Length: 461
Length: 80
Image 1 (cartoon, chains in turn purple, blue):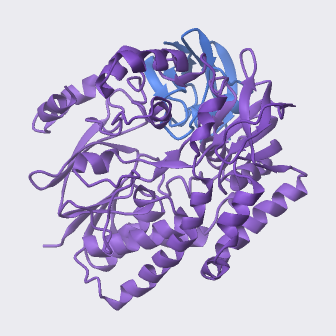
Image 2: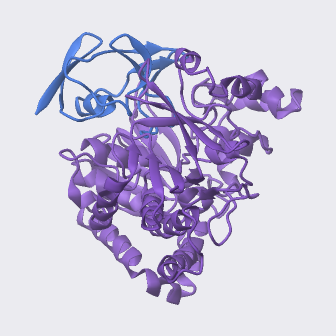
């Protein structure tokens, strides 16, 4: 009997895992929410995507070709992962948020969790106005739909991802007024200037950054360091922003405000891993909120592996390397196999590179740019004042959620959770979600029989 | 190739294969729901935040950034 490896997610890590598991003669099943494989990194549409916006497209085409030998379930949302009596994945297949999708239950000998990450966008007064999106949204709309966010966009936040976002907006016809990076020149020199030999192995990465810098220069777009968008103005949609200097702890410096007119803002302050499947599977999570894995990408749960951004934010090259190791190990491969030397060496190089990204980690002083009326939880329109008021009254995480409704809306705290925790100064444990994706009650009822739904509902209570 | 959808009664033309969010943004529409009385549009663009939900052919709470627009789709705003 072939060993059956189920891969959750079809981005770089998941595709590399599928390829490696197939190479080790496993039966491979790939499950992904998107209509097409590729994840966020290779998000595309055959006729709408400008190929100039893609990187390593040849690698993607080779990975995609290999999937001929796998079973691929696209447009499929996993809503539950069971690991207690064997490994079992419950999913629904069909158009996004359709009323009656088809239920799927798949048993596995091994599972590779490659669910990736999504943007963190820090709240700022006015950030709920139409025209404000995450940096990832601007990128997805450019790549997937060929659409620019607005006519004049300010791209603001932290980290090198802001650069491809700005380049993408320009490529599809939008004007990027400014790129605003929170980390100052001194911080960037300190973070990226040391140990330059580590960059030797990732020359492709440095070249990519050079291309983006050239794109900014060509469009005469200023790249501001040590500044932040601290307020977004507008009545019914974005009309402008206040940009301000911030100190090393990201506290706004009074008196440095300047107004910039724009009709769109893309905010990206780094990424947060999509942990809910790993948490439901029972995998141990590190104190800094990533799935803990060993040298073989194995988690603390037998038969469950993890790769890519869920194990640390390190970019597509690291995800490809980790995915290859995870897929090979999940298929029963020997970790000392010479075929694994390349991916293991690539993983080491890319992790050294990724350590530099810590330069752009969110500093706690950002909460000083909030005012009492700033909405923190977008789903339930919960303001800073309401949250701070309840913080004294309600002791437990559960109490705060029930008192304010922060994190209890449709997104289940995916957007606000970590910001709410930052403002309250304590964890809320919002990543533990009994149902992993949006499911209609009718759909759940239809697949309740024999699917473990009773336990899921009990877990929710 | 183009497709046509209606958005709160207005005819809007999009490109075949675009998401509903892509069609609306390309047509200059950026507000398609109200929350607590305030206007909202697309935010995360990748299916996480649920802020871009619309009613599609009578089915509520469909994420406009995740659903590919089909010729003839009838899209309505939502309030929550």
